[in-house]
Length: 413
Ligand SMILES: *Cc1c(COP(=O)(O)O)cnc(C)c1O
Image (tube, rainbow, N blue to C red; front, side, top):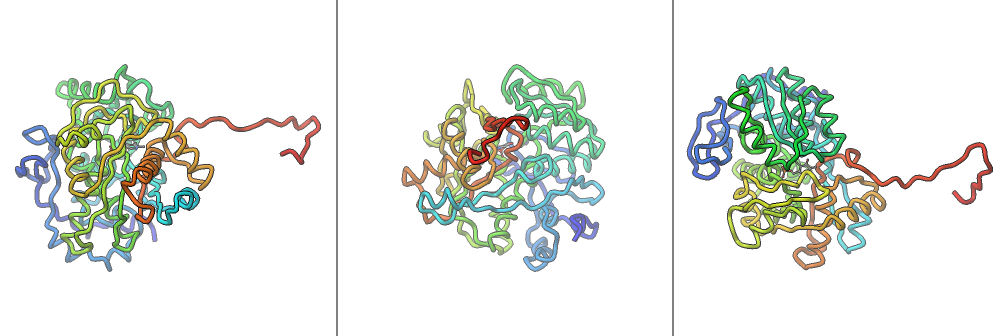
């Protein structure tokens, strides 16, 4: 089946309104919105009863495996506004060797590196850009640590929207180049992602940019929520016991949590939830600090540093949504060292043949640490998130050279 079989105009959507995640105040659908009046994220609400009459488990079973199969639970009204690069469902892969070494039979990775532009940012940005198109935006601007900018640039160019992207000067080279190659104007900034965000805020009035920063528009969460729908469906509507999520702005964790609630309302799953684990790096762990202090909001983490750029986010506008989900789920927040991240990436590739990105490595490092501390058991069904292809990141050169013209001792190879 062609993937675009999901992109038919007879698939209605069931959005009723938007709602401030902090105050519950309602906002009209089908209008351009940024943050709510109190400066917090807006959540999209649906008529789930009506949606559930059309979108049943049986209906899903007959649709191609991409994120548009959940169309009735997504915000885009008009099919012609959907800008797709083939947002395929991503596989869940077991880490057998690593699991066995700890006596665990159920260690899985959802490998999001298989998506367009090589990261799960495609899920969020395909939705944000499709909605930007639907609502008449002509230029978007955003700060990025790399992958979000790449996905935004690709989808924006595809649909004829201009994009202006600001990234920290030390963003991985391949990200900066792919952003430019995909048609954006990209600037390296001598600061962190929140400094880049301030440039967007400062320039948007005068330049007519629409601010596409994480959670500052309502639709990236809706795209990311498909991870929760998809993993539930892939696991036979039985959620894992624990999910390890590498947390920067937290869009995916918040999105999955929302998906679980919507699925329960639809009668697709029960009330059991996975323990949600927000994984951060020791060099940038504002959620871990707030979680340990029992606070609902996190203060800015100064001098943030880690090799896992995707989670080098000193401050998140959705902090309370991340922390609420972690607490309600009986999960926890945990920081891991860069050394543990490197070791995890190395082991997953060498032992199980799966090349993780550093952020994915962080989730494996956290799983090991949590096992060691008795926070989880080897019997728990654990799902890690690998959020980008490992191929985007620098790798150590471990090759050796051969001289084809000289004598070669083949027995030594
Ligand atoms: C953006 C990103 C993250 C963090 O995702 P959030 O949902 O924003 O917390 C993790 N890993 C990679 C590779 C990323 O690009």
